[in-house]
Length: 315
Image (tube, rainbow, N blue to C red; front, side, top):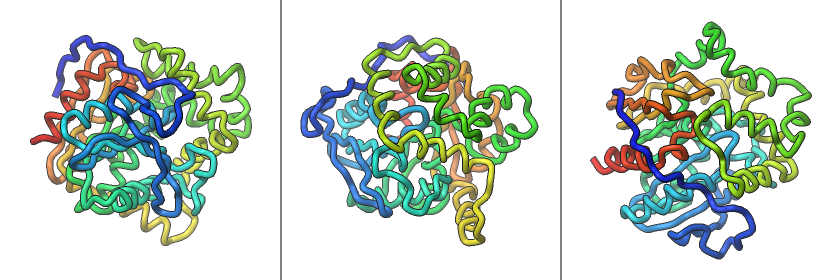
């Protein structure tokens, strides 16, 4: 499905320096920690009602979801954005894994720790990967699933090997396998990350407060190495048979009603790689490609993306 994206006011996360107990946005977003799957996850939370988990990707953090959390709360939902494992000091994976199965288990454990039977999952980038894995591992715990910017299925993995265009887009993934990566990313106030944002969302400029808050999060001790581990484990299977079996379970066809959205101008992953995804979704998939939008579509066109999502989760 191809749909147009109307011009919308940009919505951005607040900058750093707010007390955890203070409002982080107009909707009085609260910050606290929740213990799940062996980790104390920092979460942002607002509202009451059915649970919606918003899962961030790289190079990003939970604060980017604040405008969505506010709007979901206004629509009658309990909206929560957790940090993914590795994205905070003390957040290193207890089992050493940053694979899809591990992050999917984190999502399922968070649903339980937050006292819910089910949740709607909205995931962007690696957050989408975590949401897919959770839905594959335990579809009964996921009411509806929304994936943004990273498609599901074997097509993406094949593209890393056989698609020259995607290999060009994914140059940073291969660079992250080297020992130079951690030093290079930090140079010149994380200019490397600025380049990724420019290349992935060509029509979007991060506001200075959002950029500063993001760079501060990656500058925390251990965080950059932990987040690069997602990429360093991406192309190699786990060494033991039990972990391999769990990864296979986390990549099965998904039996949850699902919505997928991708920006046509995404410089990170081609929207064409989401074609044919429907085969991996046994309970229906709606696919939306938004013209004139890049990788961070929920920041570039927040009104249009939110309207699509709200309509879908209310059906």
